[in-house]
Amino acid sequence: MDQRAAQLFSQAEGQILALGALLAHIDESALGLPCREKLGDGTVGALSTFIADNYVRIAESVHKVSSQAPATRSGHRIPQWAAHRRPQHRDAIGHDEPHTADDTYTAPFQLRAILERLTVARRCVQTLADLTDAQLDSVPRSGAMRFADGKRTLERVITGMLTHQASQLDAVRAALAPVTNTEGAKSR
Image (cartoon, rainbow, N blue to C red):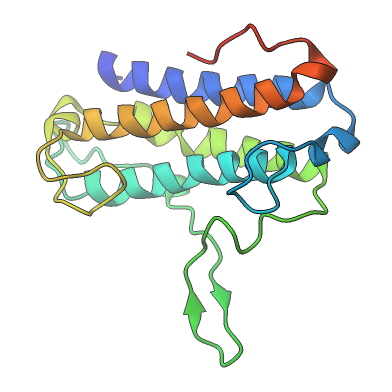
């Protein structure tokens, strides 16, 4: 495992574990606390679910982009199990619709289901640890994934996504502070 890849994986895994630990100490009713108005129904449950799903999306994007970058180890690519595909949603006439932040992030939320999503996310972000230095140094084309502008390396793009995830985690932490007294701890 390359050091930079290990560091990115450690950062993502640490964020996932922090959210899981935070949620493990709350009552399910706390999922209804207000958190971010512009996401789903604006609750802790909505943002926590969105965060978990974002890690899966990050892993999928990285897999897609990095599989186009050169591998430096013979035959080394993203593990088969990490090729997790999110289910597509079908519209009224059967066409696949992409998953967006506002379409399913509304109550009711189940704490157990969110924790299970975090478990899946943790498995998926293992793909970060498998990246080679050559893949991390590659430059994804503009629009290939979030934060990709055709100039930033894959490592910088992933770092940007994880920084965004950290700010989302901080919002959940702040919303839960009245019931957990953990507002002072940061995710970074």
